[in-house]
Amino acid sequence: MKEAIPVARAVDHGFAKLMPDVDRERAWLLTVDGAPQSYVDLDDPTHLEFEYARRLGHVLDVVAEPGRALDVAHLGGGALTLPRYVAVTRPGSRQDVVEADRGLLELVGAHLPLPATARVALHTADARAWLENARADSADVIVADVFGGSRVPAHLTSVTYVREAARVLREGGVYLANLPDAAPFGFLRSQLATLATVFAELVLIAEPGVLRGRRFGNAVLAAGHRALDVAALTRLTAADAFPARVEYGAGLRRFVGGARAVRDEDAVPSPEPPDGAFGIG
Image (cartoon, helix red, strand yellow):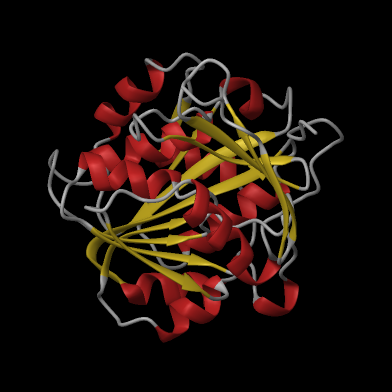
């Protein structure tokens, strides 16, 4: 079999590399400016290599009965890891992917094409602008995994943005976000407070070492108007190679403390990761 060759190319918002995994025959790692963005196994789209991706996948598994098709909007494209996962685990799902970097979408489309059966529409647009123009009550799930470099853009952190997400979600829909932070968790706590202005139910999933302040890392937030199956989510996350903790209810309210919701005029990007937190070259 022909050996896979790394691909490197300037895209609209950085320098992208697609690097083959030596341990998995048709698996690829996408980095942008040295920061890992996505991992895709073309032979097994259910394989989620990154810890945060597995946690997002676990939530996607419990938001509805297994196999039921969903309408999902993905804010942030990367290598389309989660759209591939949903297409396989929930056949017939209709999905929209919103990615500001057209060059990145073209690179991924050329080298890591989606399966022909996947019902995925790709949109080159700013995530918030796309949400503001999306139909109300049109999505069962919104997955927000948007990074400008290694930081979540400020305009995707405010109450106004969250209200737009809630408008697009159907009754019973779930908003998911991948957010980076470290102790004392000023950004993460403010994001939970912001989501709480719109959504009644909040869940946080993160590695215990991150929550204890030992290192910088990703947290997955889930928000909606109905409770998630926290027991099932806890079982799934506990079974991972790197188990995560699921926080909700009174424990999560204590974590948020007196944090304030974010207004557009006060919004800031997520904190800059420390050197070496995510970059691999």
